[in-house]
Length: 325
Image 1 (cartoon, rainbow, N blue to C red):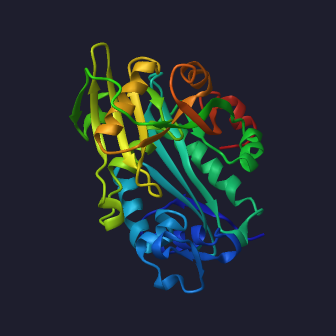
Image 2 (image 1 turned 90 degrees about the vertical axis):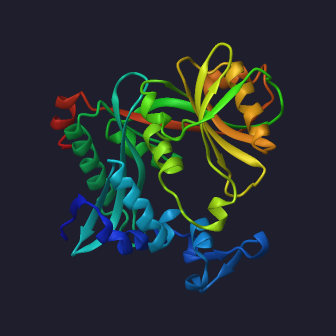
């Protein structure tokens, strides 16, 4: 049997990481986007960097993937690669950060196996390495937001459902008058242990990394600014990120943290600021219970539901007996 070698990845692996992710394109099809229309193309080398990004993110071109992985490494996070005979055939990205329960979390942001090497145990090897790496770093939990198809895979290794969330849209508007906004893109370093109240589709660390560290100097990414800072009202402070949606220019993706659970006042503040920043709509996430509570008071429209799974890394004996590490 061919040996699978799993190790930390780095900038020298960029070319092969891009090939791993590009292999996942449905029917090997690339798309161009002339005048905003999606058109099949057999010449991906002629696509702009932004068009390549639209086909699957930062991993679709060597240039953007280099910036992305470099930023990830500088942020203290870890790419892990699996290789066979010196060829990278899979990649996992592990993010580290503190959450509101005062615990260090590791979060699997990406797990991708080359389509020609799937169902050979490569994903399992990457997950085992992620578990052992997270434990060595001192993390209490390892979390992931798996696709529905992969939920049984993670459950087999001890992950269980942790959070149920609802993706929603809402109309921006001048709802709340007494409000102060202070731009500050370093504020995340000062607000450890605040509750992640809006937008928890990944860990706090990964969201902050994506929207405040991965800067691509392309016109499509610099057309609208990323607004990061502190919202102050009469009763609360909220740290928020307003990130322009890559497909809909009138919509802001919003992520927010606070010392309290999400309240209607938080949402009114977010919608007011989005309106002030020139957006018509807001997209974000709430946990299911909070969504059901707040949607009775606010004009929230449900788009879809998602789940985040979590593994308790402190149950060492159970994992070691199962030969996970």
